[in-house]
Image (cartoon, rainbow, N blue to C red; front, side, top):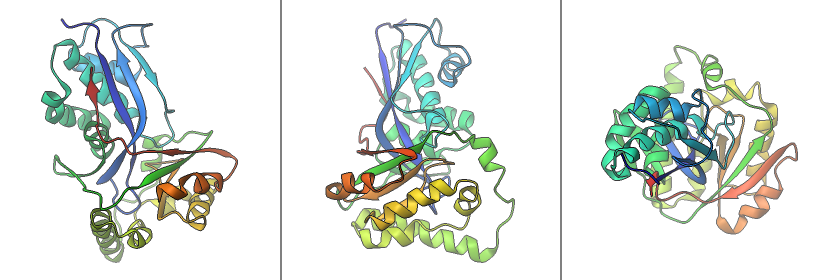
Amino acid sequence: MTRGWLVRVPASSANLGAAFDAVALALARYLEVTDEGEATSENHPAVRAFRQGGGTGTIHVRAQFPGGRGLGYSGASRVAGLLAAHAQAGRSAWEARAEILREATTLEGHADNVAASIHGGIVAVAGGRVVRIPLGRELAVVVWVPERETATAGARRLLPDQIPFADAVFNVGRASLLVAALASGDTDALRTATEDRLHQDRRLARAPDTRAAMDAALAAGAWAAWLSGSGPSAAALVDPADAARVARALPGNGRAFVVKLDEEGATIS
């Protein structure tokens, strides 16, 4: 059994508007798991994943971002716990990637957050396959985080079992445009590409402050803004030169910060 390891997993923001459960990006804010320090509760999702992966003994979990805010905390926790079991067995993060994706997706119920946390960057995921989206230009992310939480399961219950055909076509077009715009660097297309008819309006109806934050980001010059995961946080893609100004323009009833994309994904050291 290997000891003295550290697992580091980035936060994530999923959906990016139209690409529901299909596109997510990794944020340079981290959840870490180590075999040193005070034991974290067995009820923590990272510890439960560690046990499921065959881990023994105690682990210590610390995070630079909060749970219940739409920043992929549960996905990062599950990836970290599973990777911790692999670290204990002496395996590298690279060797474990495909297996961790399958196991974490089963635990999480959807693959977008866990795929971004594992691979870093901006990823598209479907059918168990993950592809990093190449970026045509440098970008930064502005995140607005309110004090309240949102339960993902409850937010998903707001969504319908069926949608009109026109709405499906609308989102397929926008999701396709999103990938093309990111890869080509066509930032003028990103605002249209992040429009959505599947989930955002239903969720934002209960979160007018989040909608106000998204509108404020766009008014301040953000290329695109979206409900981060199931919320209540909002996220925006911006020119790095404008990032601080956009963050200052967001409502004062939440915490706004600029964050880079994580390019490395989950690591074991």
